[in-house]
Image (cartoon, rainbow, N blue to C red):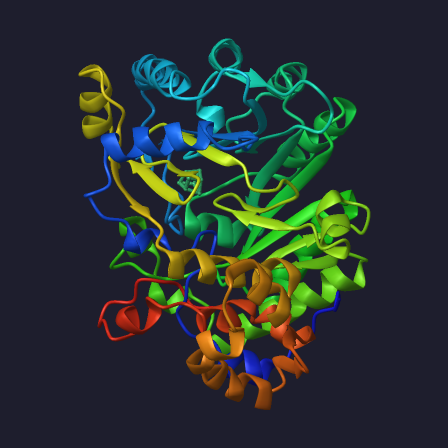
Length: 465
Ligand code: SF4
């Protein structure tokens, strides 16, 4: 397979359109409130009936942050009141019990992810307790093959917490950085030093974490190539296993904190393109492999290995090496996936608490995939993870003739073929190095729901760059 990536400013500009990131298909925009607790319970029971049942993945959402980063589009609660954490954990533990009752106790948890908000808003004892409680109610995998990860905000994480998490089985972490430049940090209200960040990275390595990832963002206010290059070089010096370098999407009509960003401080389209080009040049020049959708990894990192061996997967947490698990989502606003269904919890603390306090699960919307959704999901996964689609493989697995079923989509792909993003072969197609950079544009050709959203005046998705 093509493992390289190529930056072409002109093509990237032309294909810079709003579109999903395809951590799921259909995307959360399609969820509806006819999928609730009874449907979720039925979906959970159906997954137990499979032979063998899929392993489990747990996602735990900690929604609190002590201050707002102005660029942020996550669902979160800004507070400095630590009591909020206690109140939340009380409900979370009740939810853990309710959810655990739905799954055969022999089902092993292969993956565990703490996301937010800020998981490290919880103090070390609370985190330890949370891991213990999860272990009481679910069978957490004990060997090295487990993928237990946490998002760390270096501003709120004590070094001891890193050791404590490692002892409890956490073996991967991602560190939020975004940019070290003081002016950029001020403009986005997120001040943190390289010292506090890299100190935690050293600690994680000493504690035996298998993979340390850093998150950066390009396109932030006050950013320019010179400043961002400095940040890239600072981070490259400590050689994290992975980079996630996201594009800042300025959508103040959707994300209120972004209203505090001065539009005139945001880099122009041309500057933003240059920032992306610079990022690709610096990271690939330093030996990192482009995985897809903003992710880079060292060649011996398991994501890069999985890419080479066609074993990459994509789920709500991004890329993963684990095949399809059933994802149990815990906490306010979290999204899970059981078999061919998706479900999301209530998105406010009030509604989440009310559901749990009345002895119910907190599922408030979701979706059951139909046959067409399932087929398209498989094709979109092939594009995003393998960067190629073999028609015969799809025909065999889905009892269709690809060229007939997707005749309209193959027509839509033609301009991308003409522009060199996609190469057609006898009975399939593959993404070229520039196509890999624009893979979501390729996937968008197979999204049955996108034309409806594209007619809307309010953009529902961020742009590619
Ligand atoms: S970026 Fe992270 S820490 Fe900052 S407000 Fe968003 S969720 Fe909270």
